[in-house]
Image (tube, rainbow, N blue to C red; front, side, top):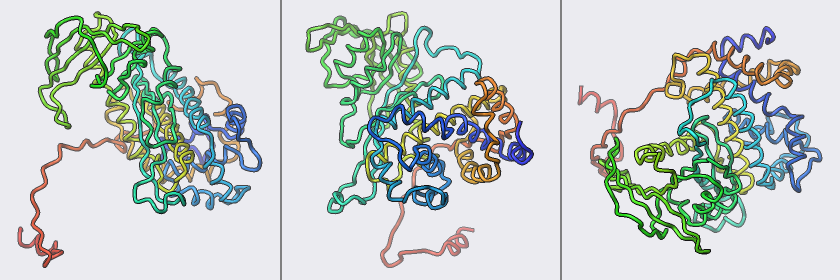
Length: 451
């Protein structure tokens, strides 16, 4: 399957080699450049290929290089100046960043479905999708227009659509305006709604026209109620059942849009046994799901919304998804898109590991931290050691053959090397005495005093 030297990597760092195999499959330079020519609207290729830009950015996202400039300098073979490289990413079209995510997501889903047996649907008859927004963290004040501003410059935000069953980010809607309201991007979400989709979202997306449009397209939703939405009660609020989080109440309400169309919904109130971290004692949900789906099921489905927030946390913690030196919005959003591609590749790795180790719960036990650490330490070695045509068979193989290769590598992974260690609840910090006359203490003396 592999040459002798790459087989040594398969024995020593099989998880990293899985990542490399997937990068070769998804992002093969010639195929990526052909894809770019098809999706780019105004940009075109002169001396700097899009595949080169992508490979350099991947090195930063995977924490193999500390910056794009460092990746450029380490490569040494890029045909243009570093200024031209930055000009390219600073003006990269948002449609390209979005299309890259969708392109990789489609390939990830195809492989995951081959790697694992058909999963029982989260809710039979529906495809669950979670919608949430992500605001990129502030950048450095590198642009001249920000030099005199004390406020932090925001390079943009995006909406993400997540498939909780497959663990894949399906799509992102990038926006250059860091102050834009998430609901201002909903018109583009509407284009992604299919019949029998079940959209789960927080209250920021509780907008009349959005609810009506989902229903009109024969989709369904569970969205947290926003106080700005006007509802008219059709029935009294009645106790229906209890769940592990609290007591559930339900009533029928209507929501009317500006055209006078009336939409009948279920209003479900969860009175919590324990307040949220924000001190809220109840959660109110709106849904157009039929009565055959119980209030407890709806509450449980909404509770699963945390999975997309977990995905955002992993993007920030284990990938360099938000680089503070990339001050131009298009560059920052491209970096985030590349990180999403890496996240979806990670989802394929999890599926392969689960297939090879069916007795383990990979999603619960496998640590992305240790994988990211291994990649940053080992991946460059694979790139250096591999012959130019080493992975050609991956690019031309069927999906089934690639899945077999991933299972083979996954079977060699020692799961104990990637064991996740869950942290217990944080202890309250004791009060600390501070004296300006004693700005520091000797740890050695304190240890002696308390021995």
